[in-house]
Length: 233
Image 1: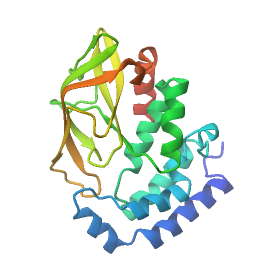
Image 2 (image 1 turned 90 degrees about the vertical axis):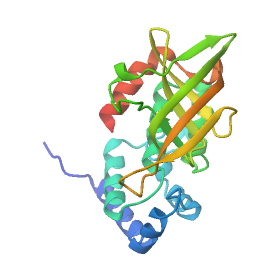
Image 3 (image 1 turned 180 degrees about the vertical axis):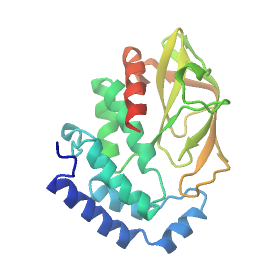
């Protein structure tokens, strides 16, 4: 069995190596690490122009429709260059939308993500900083066709620049994924200390945040989506 990269994957790796060597020089990385967001709009758009923000998004939603090996190839080169910003956060969010979202939700979010017009992140961790789904305590209450959310999530990557925050919450006896968009009433974001200046972490607080039922990803799919996404990370 051949475990080597294919010719196409090797070309992708070489292209990523050249691009990041040119566009993500060490002095620029250090400059972004010292900023509040570690984000550069121009660099982000250049990444989108390469097609990488749509790397694992289906072609029907404007992506390249590639797989995890191709993502790993690009991510390896990004790690070599210490690329700052919300790339991994955004593609993790895209993977959850693709796996748990309805047809309408996939249409709403995936194409803008692929085009580099929307950045996303996932709010998972809480006080115990555990990745076990049983440790998720933040509850969403269902009332009159909406979900109400009060509490907080910790260590949320890139929440300061994310346009879409996917919040993993407990709802009834199961879990739900709530899509919370930037600027919604009752949402506040505060920076947290981080050892890695290329990946800014935040505390995200919810104070009576209202999320419409249409903005909740399919409850029956959430467990499988979280499981497959965590295995992919």
